[in-house]
Length: 265
Image 1: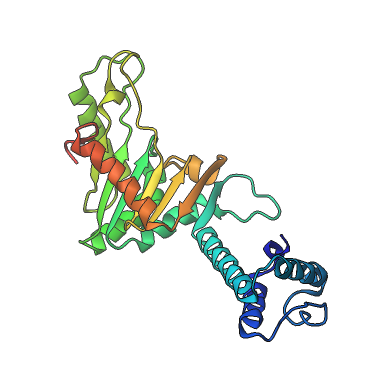
Image 2: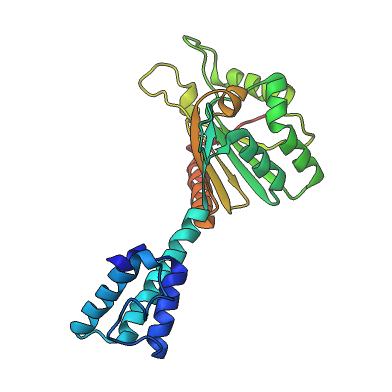
């Protein structure tokens, strides 16, 4: 249908002149010249005359055109809420946003709460560069709550008791990962510490939820390599429903004791 090729302003303009009676059948190229692009005027005139011939009233055509314009507006709004987020080689015409830039923006604009989930995480100076801005935000804003869901890994072939591995990770987190005065709540997946391969699993999800309004879902871990050098892809959704659903998913796992609070943090 030729109407699908018309822009939103053209659809609304055509609907208006049809509804008010300023445009009436039979439709000619000259009568619709001010309503639609010249390249489409012949097809539009033919389609309008065809609809009238089948018994469709001009006001009904106008109503349909307004519906198409509203749907076009809704689709654009949805597209405006989605950003492609990318780490890696840049190409000509690329419209994506940089992972590191997006994460820093999310951290620096958070007001109420942040949820972070990552399989791998850097230590030392690399970790401080990634999380320094968030630590500063927590220290300056006592109302900002941060939850981190991290994979605590059992070393290969290690039989070290789980309690010791957790204590070591908590020490590492406080000394070599987090630089702020206030500590976030940290959670882990007990199955990542299981001995043997049959029951072992990982917390592999990578995402950030901010203020229950925005959510970044990404392949990138919280490491310098993933944010600056690897090829990683994600989407940033300015969608409160999606953000709240993501947070609820983690909260359900905590409530059902599938994910546990890390002692010592």
